[in-house]
Length: 384
Image 1 (cartoon, rainbow, N blue to C red):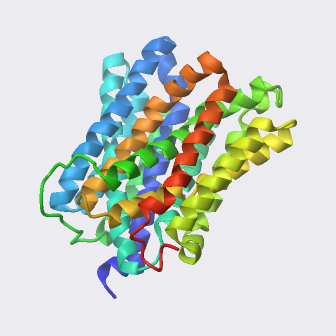
Image 2: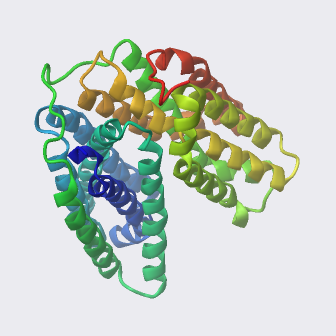
Image 3: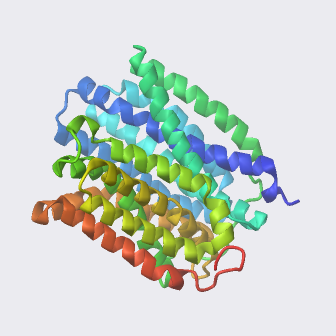
């Protein structure tokens, strides 16, 4: 058994995904406290939050280059420990400039571990010879649930923001201490250029990655407003749709590896995107709340395994080194998350929020139509 196919290595990979999801989720409940502490308005807060996104994207671009030369292990370690150490800074920053710097560092740590853990996951999956990527991504979702739930519970128990972050940071440090020695010591190092612009099939994969991440982000930012605006649910229950969507995503990914092993990458992309499109149709034509919730469920299940498959395809293409290809998809995905909400808002202003969601369904159709093209070199075990 190779070192890449050992249970300990798979455990380390899962823990890296768990820490990344846990870390970013711990920040969300702290946002109102940061706004109050700094005494800033929504406009200034929005600019400060942009620092996190900028730090992530910059780190992602650099991580692809560094992983190509030094492997993913040191970057996973640095990113994971960096998240744990930067989190308490977000709870004590007392000036806008200080918080902006802390958010940039936090975002850089998140971007680094995000790219590196996917590169590591690609190598572990390749050594195993069977799909594992969906299960790894499920741990990111579970980490997100755990982080937001724990932070919210601690704050509800009247712990101060700093104490809450210190508790969460200790848990992350323990997880990273378990992860560190079990990561691949000889992670794949790529020869060739340090930077390659995405082109050919890789450009299409990056575009599809941006679309899938955009859909996920839109469900978070606009899903509640859609069903509230349609008069399907009262304002207090607007978040129910996203909760169902998130649960469906997590469940879909937990079972995704078995599904992909059985039907392959191509069929997973085709039917996953088709189910998501069906979910949009159900959501946008729903006469009552229960039907709308079913739409959220279908979108979550359909979209759940699209991103893991796209990462796998990035590892199998030959136009770019694997590390740079994974970084390109991750960066494109974050661009979709960062730019997407504003784009949805712009379309909504022009033609209404339902029109914006119909556009998202149309973009998901591009994923469906591209399924055959991006999997044309598919191997028997992972593609139909």
